[in-house]
Length: 354
Image (tube, one colour):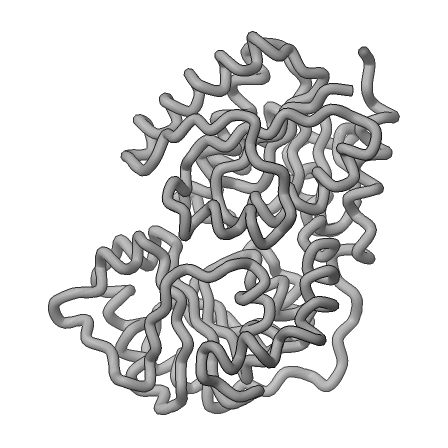
């Protein structure tokens, strides 16, 4: 088989690293980087840390308004697909790269497979929600991380094309965690923190970064926590850190980190504060309490299990959660068994009609 894989943002690089490893054992993969995350700190450092092959194509689209960015991706992806004519186009998650890849392929009648299908926040104000819904309804094969995702698709009339496979991110996390067993202490030393004596924070979703009042409340909560906070800052967020958004000396702003460094810091944190979907799952798998700075989440199982608490951007709720949140002493398995990539490749082979 020839598979064209579309990536463009950090979480997609992680997922692609696991699946590409399996695909390339017997099949040809064309890796198309849209350039949605276009600078080295947001993309190149991830490729280096994950042993992901260099992209065959980099569209270098960069950052712009949703419509302009998606349109530029559509044009570039279409040109590559017309030239290569793959058997499948594989898209991940819920970014503009996901939407553009699914649209371009479907218009050219190339089958689409959506990895991480069926997630729903039921908040149509989130651009990610629009992207994932459209991608799901355009896809010919849908790989779901949970029973909830399968049920969401069934409620929308998508049944036979949906398959419960688990979450491919667990495959790559397991590999990174093994490495962190021996090299994690060096990472903590590099950033001057000690195990379980700091919080790890990330804020990147537009609902938080583009709303001044929400971002101000979150940052004020960080100031009020009174513990060391390690805060790798997304470029979108850094642009907004000005004026009245002064942070205390206990909040340490870092440049975006490699995936391995993030795993090492995540597994040793006392608690994680985030609006990232991927980090919510990783916190659960690593056994670290998570406070999610959103009003809802697609990863509802982590909340039901008692390891993830939703606070939105409410300063008082965030501070109270940091000081008082105590998850259960046990964690059941969620989102697969760490062998998801091989299962996905088997399904691609079984469903391939060419």
